[in-house]
Image (cartoon, rainbow over all chains, first blue to last red; front, side):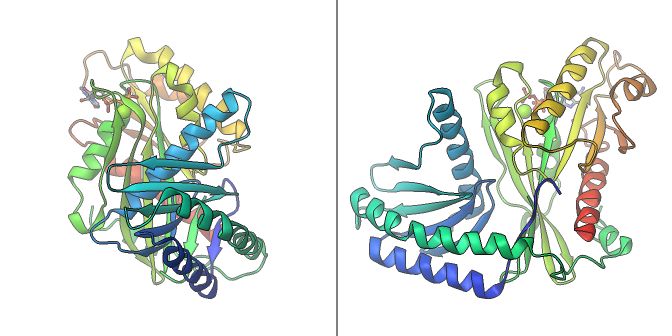
Length: 160
Length: 194
Ligand SMILES: Nc1nc2c(ncn2[C@@H]2O[C@H](COP(=O)(O)OP(=O)(O)OP(=O)(O)O)[C@@H](O)[C@H]2O)c(=O)[nH]1
Ligand SMILES: [Mg+2]
């Protein structure tokens, strides 16, 4: 692998979901998501409806990567937050280490409130995620794939 | 970077299609998208110019099936091939688990292929990734064109290691799934080692 995989245990997942749920409530947001900087969705909480959160995650990561690139060009390390305000729906993104906290909100909330609440929980999320990374690096955890067979891999492509 | 979620029992891997401008990267993704059942895929997102050149990336999530109770999902990306999009091209490589290099078989694109492969190696190095160790496939695309040079010549110029080489006509789908399968297989085999 290019760098170590992230392995998320069930307890951690629920811990993160609980933090997201709290943030959503405190900020009156429509939806709160945690996304990896590479564009993979980690957890999401809120009014999903038929929102395509996979695409949202990859575009948010692309957005942060692009503005981060601009930051470097002008001599900044990165832009820690990004906000996009629409007529009704808005998005606020907070960069927390290697993850992004994404809040989608409408006129039931405000950018000021969302910014404040996001900032308040970002330390907690950073700490939790640092622990997850540490757990992922622990040698010897038995991954379900260590004994995967060639036949199993081939079977994934059997429809072709 | 592979992401394994025990709660949702999912494993996500990132595959990037790289290569010179107009070599057919987007066409590969488009074909995969068009020929995959609706329940196995998400949206195909294309951040492109008015003339359909990739501006930032194309993205599509593809679910292959279940291994050992885990859903295996591949996130497929293409980079913009045009030389001046270097900054965005580099960003897309971050966290990659496997690379497909799409070469353009036309004689007049040989220099562009070589330049692009060097650019790939260089950009991987800035993230401390090594092409020699990465799951990797060389696709020789546009085999249908009269100006296509012999596959052996392309291989001797572009092959970097013992990577699988797939001859393709992405616009009609020839070799597209063989390419994907060749890279996905290496990514999954890599997981076995980790
Ligand atoms: N004849 C032929 N044409 C192809 C083939 N594959 C792609 N094309 C055509 O080549 C052109 C460029 O293809 P794209 O897939 O947009 O190329 P790209 O690599 O994504 O280009 P950039 O986004 O600029 O990097 C399109 O007109 C395709 O239809 C092929 O195998 N044979
Ligand atoms: Mg393209």
